[in-house]
Image 1 (cartoon, rainbow over the protein chains, first blue to last red):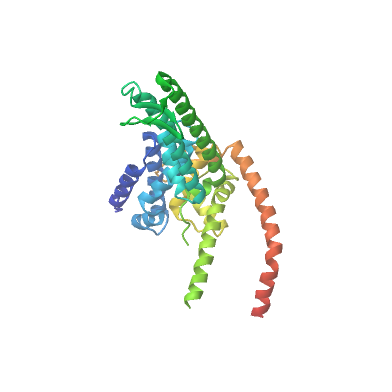
Image 2: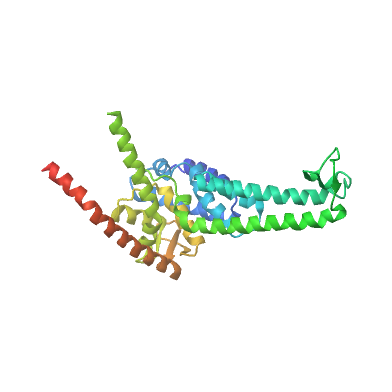
Length: 197
Length: 127
């Protein structure tokens, strides 16, 4: 009698490791792997355990699925969090990806910073602003007021919102475009693990 | 001895990278004659090429090809008692496979003429 327990343990591990995918995508993947293992074991001299070993660790298999999925999703969505996660995955593949990740981090930090300044201006109107003096420039929140004149007053809110929104949008569009290009050029390298010899 | 091992490691890594780069093309080529399922594709690749695959490698590639609309997938009940997920090339996938085949043949022919003298020398040394 065939022992299915190692298979069920493997599939449960795979299911839990398939992050960032829909329930139906995960179920579909698990069913395909189950069918593969059962048919391989029944039509060859391999046991279930040996077949599972040939598939590789469940976590590694899930990572191969998710890595491709993450880049693919990031190239079509507008979520900065998703784009940053995909850029981080890209960064792990080489210096080019690392540069893209840094650019994404910088763009989102800068854009987010402008938006944050706009949001805190109504709460701390005196401490938040754009000050300019003799050789002095400061934008943001200060507990001790800097020398020089505050330039924008309440106009700081729309200016920062527009600038922040623009930087966030441009960063997102640039990252989406880079990821779509990366997916076309390097998709094979992203979604496969080291071929075993 | 250690230097020789290092040299072998270098060749093995290079071969692994070469295989990785060829996998997508090989999977599309395996689907060119008609629909097929994961295990059958693996067997086809084992039979017709020296791409020794980790069996788990093929499924994420198939999943990505489907997401890129290069292949279609459909579950079919089989006589074996387990349903099989059959993949077939879409029109876009067929075009991509043809482009890849053309590029590959040009690439391989160009490199072969460059590599031939190396192999002749090796054969001469053996003789």
